[in-house]
Image (cartoon, rainbow, N blue to C red; front, side, top):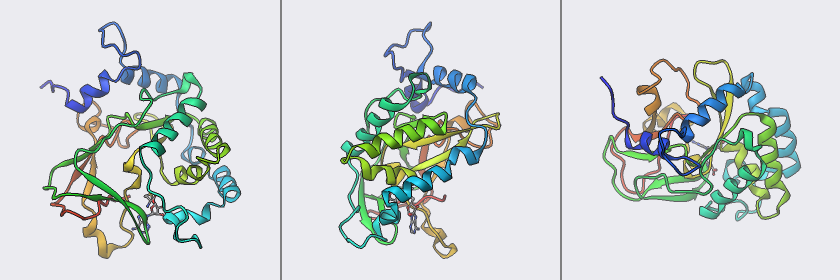
Length: 262
Ligand SMILES: C[S@@+](CC[C@H](N)C(=O)[O-])C[C@H]1O[C@@H](n2cnc3c(N)ncnc32)[C@H](O)[C@@H]1O
């Protein structure tokens, strides 16, 4: 049976940086896949995480102060800021300013809301910033859909280093260099043994998890990948196209924090 594209797939396919949807033009999604395939991605998960370099800059920036949303900071007001549209747009600008155009795998140039329900971002110790439901959400609701618009892909650790160094240079964005270390994910490319680095520039990166079994029941949303079910039934991990939706796995009350298992 041929499935018609879901609204998310359709918008992904229409998300062309050339703005057109002419049949002879490859969509952004197609060009992105082709570029990933020709580039090949990063050879190992370890190199993608780039831990030694990240450790060095964490020391230089004194990121200890901001880890866990500021709980280690002696100044209770330090780094408890709530990211807003301007924060996400600063990350978009840094990505497009630094990543080699041949490696640029992001059509969007600015933040667009990917939430399908009203949310609030609040700071709460010990986990730092988190995302909260503003109204009752019935089980099964799609609460966030990525369409990959807000997710940047890095095809090499060097590209990501340039992105972080760019943030570090400007006093207005320097603190974000610490934040993006914790907002990152490394994912395996489908059907390969190679990896890409994914950074989402929206509130999805503020989702907290549960850290002990007793609070497992607090997990209330889970990722659901359209790519997994639609065109890639055999992939075992997602690239940055994956996790296209977060779905409520039970009823969520107004004021409850969204939590995801990671
Ligand atoms: C993806 S970020 C989530 C957003 C983060 N709270 C912030 O303020 O930017 C992951 C980080 O959040 C914190 N975190 C997530 N879940 C937590 C939990 N259950 N308890 C304590 N800290 C948590 C940890 O510092 C973790 O490294």
